[in-house]
Image 1: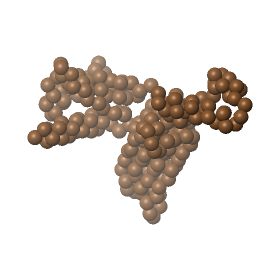
Image 2: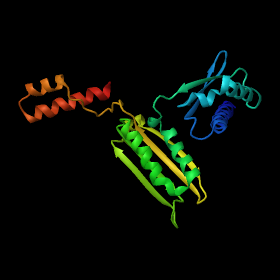
Image 3: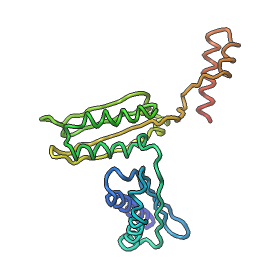
Image 4: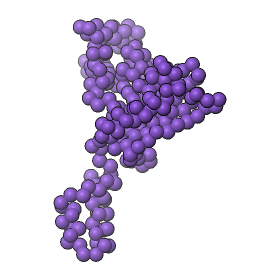
Amino acid sequence: MEEKKFVGVRKDEYNVKQFVKKMFGKGRVSRVTIEYTPVGERIVVSSHKPGWIIGRKGEKISELTEILKKRFRMENPHVDIDEIAHPEFDAQLVADDIAVTLERFGSSKYKASSYRALSRIKNGGALGAEIVVAGKLPSDRAKTWRFTFGYLKKTGDASKLVDRAEAIAQTKQGVVGIKVAILAPGVRMPDQIIINEALLEEIRKNATLEEVEETVKKKAKRRVKN
């Protein structure tokens, strides 16, 4: 019985998230999170342009609140806006932006839109990124194109630090899927070695190559543990 109730709650949450994204349109909302508090439900909408979500004098917020009460039977929903300061590092916004471009101008623009998005990510200072576009691109058969740069972890615990998202573009030629993975600047990987004055001083004290390698390994192990 408890399992069915848990599944029902998760299903309701999924429906709310999908409705909010659809209400404001593709490319305007990155993610929707729902928190339960003693005074009611808190719905956090993450967007890089809060004005789209709030509306004139908060009319869209009021409209969403009423829909959550009547359609989704929430007792006391409270909608908050989480502004995304750097949309070029948000994988969902980047994927949605490419999808919107393909739906508006056709799948023939997949290279231009992908390279443009990759350029914004790179110029912003990201450590690495990957964009994969697959589906009915301008050809007789479905294709997959991959656009990458920099450093990107795909396996292990370090891969959890990579922001990943997917989007779908409904074009006249057919369905096109977009996958985006971004490693934002400032993220410290577990196996990353930073050479600073303290490390250089320790290296200077060591005379042999074996001792230098051992010092570097110890630094890496300490970083993984921390």
